[in-house]
Length: 468
Image (cartoon, rainbow, N blue to C red; front, side, top):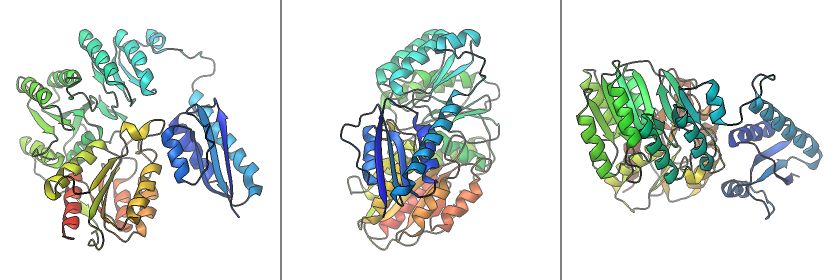
């Protein structure tokens, strides 16, 4: 008979990535059926409830929850010992560094010893303003990886950067390639003549993957944050990034990729781009605009390169039940692109759903779904069990920073489904996860795997449309 144990540890804290690793380590211990070690945020409490754990009502976001389900009560001591060991190892990894050096307490003091350069800020969003402003005042460009940063803080940072001739990448800047070095979630690509400015993380990665497949390299990819082209922010980082790439003699063509921008900001930035010496290809998503694959093809034609066929592996089974398309995404731009294409073909408000699990609303107190797939896997199971679901559409994004073997977690969940699954697999042959192996594993589980997200979305729409 199984035994469940749930306890609160008030005041204990570890970051979401460390706790993800702790949870996985405990799940592998003998006698453990399920385990979740997490801060008691509202979203994590929802996950714990979905796993069948009964968490005390007084749990709050400053409490650590240890929840385990065991084969029997006799293994509880061993399971808690596994929790203690995993937490200890996570803590030692976080300390790191030379034992005889006192750590700097603030970004400002650290930059006194290492001025200039690029500072990457990855702290809870409400604290990012202070660290990023310290970096700007020290004369450094900043990449703000943090999400859930208030828009007022973003505007303040970008005004301060503009006054100093500096660049703020982000907030929520998940992808960048600077001087050939990938930061955040970055694919491994060859150097080449294209420079990217990206108000979109996975949109940037889609272009990196498609251009790499076509044999075209990228010199730089400067992420500017998904809100930079929103009306509230006005595009200051986009303008600065365009200026810098225009001044780079290695860049022959600049591509500006973005989620749907505010029309007035897009017009202003477009006018600025027209005045640059380096040609700029706009890849701005929106109804009636070219999708990202079409944008990649336009880039290839401007460079005089051939457009290759975009790979498709496997064949999805015909839709045999339901009438609805369910899109479950880890990439916000990939999700928006799929939604736009589906609504153009099937109509808006027809009941089809598209969820971006990387949105701020899903990541408060949790690791990004490209690292922790737990939430999406739970929703996938619910969507597959819904008789109204006709087709599942998913993305899988590879590269440094992402889950080391996403297919190993996703393929078992797909293998026994009785409905068609279409996957856009965004990655390059040099990515650490092994693009070919990931493709084979997902196709082996019955999915139809596309390198092009637009191609995957259109295929899913076709399958839903065949149901009439």
